[in-house]
Image 1: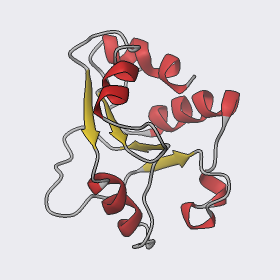
Image 2: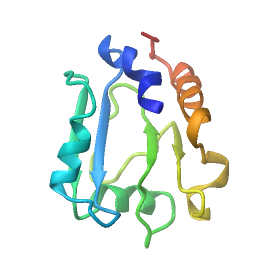
Image 3: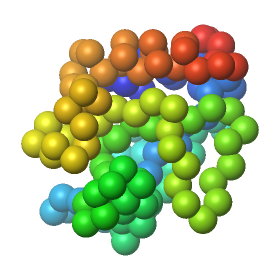
Length: 132
């Protein structure tokens, strides 16, 4: 799992994880988001947000040139200190699990066991990241 790849760095506070739970599938709602978020160990380096209106997913997809789409099952990596303003900034690296969505970029598709190592490698290439 991708989370296991970066959890030690999050515990060491060299990485902050933000999970945005977007209602995309039947059964997705605030209660489901809360239930899933409780599966992650509580730490100050992890934040969870529920986005029932898909605002963030729509903003990310729009930034990627897919205005009518919603980005979900995405992993976006940003450098430390980046500020978000009115428009979602471009990530320095990103990956997704949307196999049948060509707008998401087939060369950014990662699934299963290759996702974790790919995220770890991308993090190591981001200036300022120190592995835990």
